[in-house]
Length: 333
Image (tube, rainbow, N blue to C red; front, side):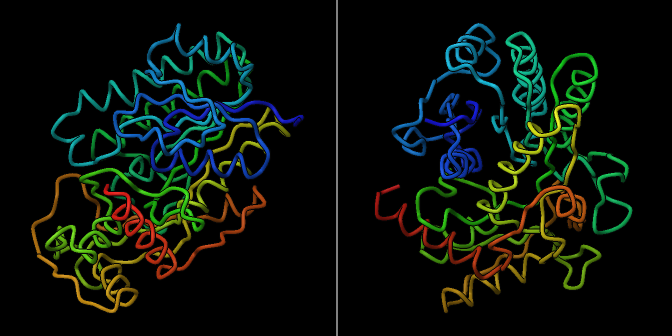
């Protein structure tokens, strides 16, 4: 038995959520998952972790899960995450990310859940005035995805003021890689994450990799991003949970990244290096809503949490992503 309280992971059958479930279990936390399995996979949730299939916007359903498992903390990953899609279908993003999050937060308040960790994004910064991005810089999202997340951040701040619930907002930069033990990884068909797309191309699942934008004000003209290994990100969530419990009157807002940016071309060079082959690159125009560069200033999280990244190496991230992609091929995915 454990004296640790039960944690609800929403979206726990998805990419980042499933890694958080693994990190929590590895650290001895009891876990329960809610996922509607629209983009998640039942097999991504370990057999000994209860999985409730449903929607976080369904408050009677969610409150039944919270009470039934005596949940004391929520890690909220459920939502829609494709930036170009948010531009073409904004209402989907405000429904799935903002309206549904509002319902989940109300369910947490109704059930007396004292701790809430929110999966936010660097897209809240928009096109930052300087790089790296600090948490105290202006938030000016340039796409509905970023705005839908920023609105949830604002709700959490207001709710924590009005109710006995504290929160941690983690703004992710570009999440990549896969569980080093091969238990989970990015499995979504048609994913838009660069490293996922590149390793698919390396294994013949795609004919090429599109490079969207070659005229950005960056060293080689392609977009620069801060790539964080998904297992390092999951570990940050466990540390954040411990910090919320230890400091119930404190709310936190922290970037999750390595403070090191790589351009699209540099990432593809790394994939070429790891695979010892050359991926075909097709140069295309910019996508709407893409900023030139997004790199994290991670000094705050390093100072506040005992978080020490284990996989802050681009070739390692690519190697783990490639290993997972091969495993998907073996299982016919």
